[in-house]
Amino acid sequence: MPDMTHAHAGPTLIPPPDHLTVPQFLFDSLYRHVTHPRRLANTPCLIDDDTGQKVFFEELRERTRSIATAINFHWNLGEGQIATIISPNHIDYGPCVWAVHRVGGIVSTLGPMLTAGEFVYQFQIATPSIIFVHSDCLSSVLQAAAVVGVPSDHIIIIDTAGTSGPPGFRNLCDLIDAAPSLPPFKERELKDGEAKTKVAFLAPSSGTTGTQKLVAISHYNVISIVIQSATFNRINEAYAPVQERRFRLGDVCCGFLPLSHIYGLVYNLHFMIYAGLTLVLTPKFQFEKFLASIERYRITHLTLVPPQAVLLCKHPIVKRYDLSSVRYCIVAAAPLSATLTEELLEVLPNVQLGQGYGLTETCGTVGMFPLTQNVGTLGSGGQLLPGTFAKVVKPDGTLAKELEVGELYVKGGQVALGYYGNEKATKETFINGWLKTGDQVYFRDKDIFVIERIKELIKVKGLQVPPAELEGHLLTHPSVADAAVVGVPDEYSGELPLAFIVLKPDLVAATADKSALRASIFQHVADVKSKHKWLTGGIQFTDAIPRNPSGKILRRILRERVNNTQASGTVIRARL
Image (cartoon, rainbow, N blue to C red; front, side, top):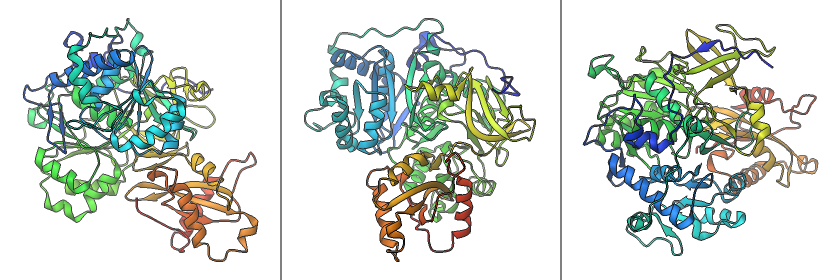
């Protein structure tokens, strides 16, 4: 067991309130924290990028209360029960989340692009009492709900305003309209300290071992990371002339990051609303539409993942749009190269630009680039947020010094409770208040530099792909004897999954042209897995998968093979 003394610490943090739910903290003046920022009276919280609909603070609060009234009356949703939300970004995504919190429930956020089988897997970990679903996802969700026993009358369609919607299902807008005639619900009030253990979200993550898990995030975790981020960026302070401050009243932020993932859910939605910004919610990212929205709404703040940064640097259409309103840009979810950072500064010359680093298990953020840097240290994942402690542990269990590489451990109010329903994984990863991140890092002058993930996850456009999941599925193909999957670098997506395949002996000599086999294996994955998990990095046939004496796949050797064969023509590549 490594020494639990911390070697690095962020700035001091005033302790966040530990007796509030997330919506009480965000919306109720009775519970306003001392650092809660002001919002201009005519500034909406949300704008629907498709329709232009604006939702202001009080309307957002009242829609939340109406939904809470309806779900309490119709389904008696209450203490500790789970509501799952499955939808692209939508103007009522937040109100559905906060309504569940108001009545004491837990929100499970799942991506709308999962397959029916993937929904079944997640529902079996945390079976929902009710499901909020977008009509685009309804077919897959119905199949999964039937498997785990969620009745169709417990499914609420989130996106059918002004229409009757699919027959046989509740319509969210109808529920909101009818709420004033229903008896009021009793709001869940927390005792001192209870917010630290009361689960607010179950967020999907593959953890450090590559197997799918649901991270249990408390109300205190969310409140803490919002206040940590606000303190780090000095949201309420007149630390400089207004025109030089990073966050100002009336600022506008892009909102295409999926709210089903931690970066979009916490930093893009909760923090930006807390900080007084307007969030322009976009259901689906389309690059030219994104550029047009920056120009139309005079967007000041960009929250990006590397694929969007690549497009801004490379796509010729960028020159057609006025991006001069952009003053702040943070890139997270995967590392951004120094070269790409420099190219992005040419496109956005007046921007404060840097990276952030975090995990689902840390509510999205451990560090970000500080106010003292208009441009974050190249290659750095930023500096520790206030109230965050870190240490770097070498393989022998001793603490690494400055510039020495080891595994990062972090501690702070944003560190989650553990993995829902998975005590073994929780004990392995959450150790005496410390999170064992599985990331290999070093510190230099307060900056975190991530070398590589010790865990073997592949990240495609910021979305996690567990190799073990794909390997297990590949072994069900009738022609496959063994398989290994690694991530290969891709400028656009960050990484792409590539499979090494050992064919069954009778096929090795009998099949001279392997193109049909490649196509069959590719389709075998594409038929049942989400698009970001497809083998778009390629398929290579090999005589054997290299393993160590205990049977663990030696992925380093496989990555070296990829580097040696990229130009050989044996790899199928496809663009997502």
